[in-house]
Image 1: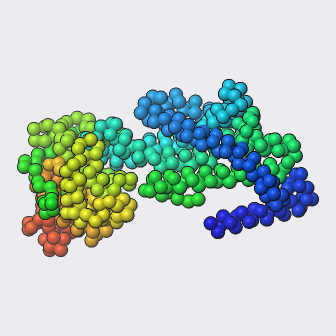
Image 2: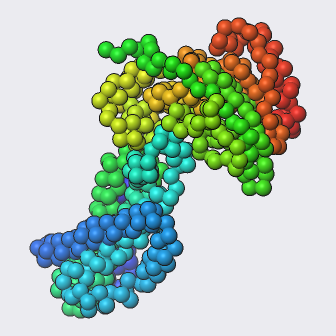
Image 3: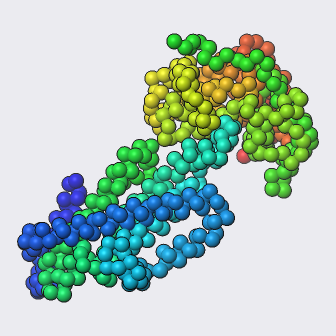
Length: 248
Length: 257
């Protein structure tokens, strides 16, 4: 906690220095206090748009994680599928979301759907890859033990391979939670009528730079909160996992 | 109240474990070639030998985890042993997400069997290995010796006439190992136990019969054992003399600089 305060204070100090050094041009880089004023002046507006973005991120996280986990399971249960699906997943990951964003907006409209799809698309890959890794790297000793206990394929999957893969799924989810805001905000930039990304573009165009920074700060806070909450929930659900979940 | 002194009575007629004409290649190396070997029913048979000679592979063949290229693995009548054996590996293989008691009941859970009196039996077994207090803890909170005792309880929970042990106590400290050997002897007496070890003292303490596995393809050779009460005491002069003799015999293979 103290470390976080020091980091925050340091950043604010650097910010003020940069502002002073760059000729105190508030329309390019406003000082922290102007951003704070903008934040309190527009608290309602920020809250409304933040709620939209948060909804997009959370929905995208749930949908992307569900599809990612399902894809990993499908490739595990039906091995011949893996060599067909992997190139597809990698291609979907290699294509910059920026490139697909206009298409998704064209197909799914200016509303919630295109942003959720964008966030889901970004989250899908780390979850699928982490979970699939976990499912294919079960300790062979556990599988031997299950075989000598006359366990069937499904029982082995349910009681051994799935729980053993949860740490992999968890690290995929943690990465997914960290990148999910990117998808939502890009979607908002390309075409939307609400959300922090929309607000930032709008404020930028009208030279309300302090408001833009305030929106950026809210977005950063949301991303950090999401990351921390995901970590905390996963640690609570997987108390036996240490290496991937301990740490910041 | 369950009977803590004998939570797992020995089976009426444990089978012999017999390998007849078994051949196996791993890669290009022949591990076994027309191997004939039998572990007598109802007693402990120990397999000693240098690393990499095929001790673990022999156990895996018996467990059905590695199929033989040729020959039969089964009981004296050649019938397969699947469903009649329990497996205890060098690693305790406790699932980290299950409590100690749930780990002991793992077999029933995997087979989808009703667990009404299984819970009671598991508790009795945990009590007999001295872990009743730790039943609801996660394995990570246990010491190495405790973990192996939990693994032993899980092995007993399966209540199979044949028990296969692959260097089961090699990862624990020497004092805990002596205790675990006594516990295994007490709890597994009367079953057909086949165990491999690289510790001559463990083979001498626990084996009713002991073989040295050597060569490529590997062949078992029986070694003479001192008399006396079983499990043999580690400080018995006859056991110590036998120990020294085994070390001398194994030295060319094991003590290379």
